[in-house]
Length: 183
Ligand SMILES: [Fe+2]
Image 1 (cartoon, rainbow, N blue to C red):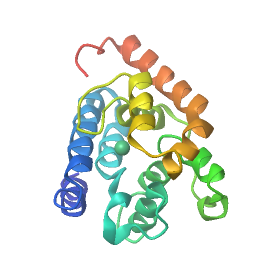
Image 2 (spheres, protein in one colour):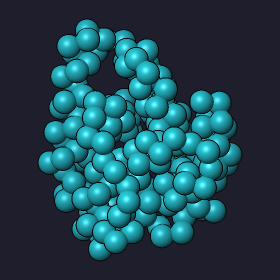
Image 3 (tube, helix red, strand yellow):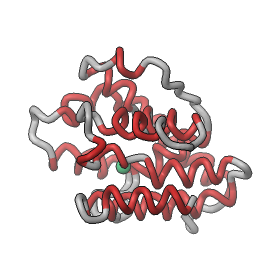
Image 4 (cartoon, rainbow, N blue to C red):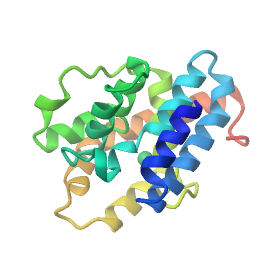
């Protein structure tokens, strides 16, 4: 956990301070969910710290940040599940298809679990400056921040239904546990 936090800080805090604010708050939200997830709590929290590390300029090989982050994490000692969760977070698979990057995503496994849904949820409900946002507002904000030709916009609609469904399942679980006002 400490390694995940310090790695994210080293790669993002100076180079991309806004991204770092987002990541810190995504990780904080994951940390509030973690105690309710049993053994998977640590996987969620570590993945949240690392999910956007691929934006870091030294790691941005392909320019598609989920892939770049996962390729870096494959070179260090983290569980395979963390690598896969980062590679495929927040509908990265559908985005990769939309971008013609399918071939490079082969080998990453989408575990389609509650933990995966919760990672997508925390990413999709924390805005670019670290503020809490509901999912629809977050998607509107993404659309407003990037130029129409940017790959994020090109890929946004490809993953929208899957993203919305994951956030809905995560929200349902949070409500069922009775922790909506704590997370
Ligand atoms: Fe993110």
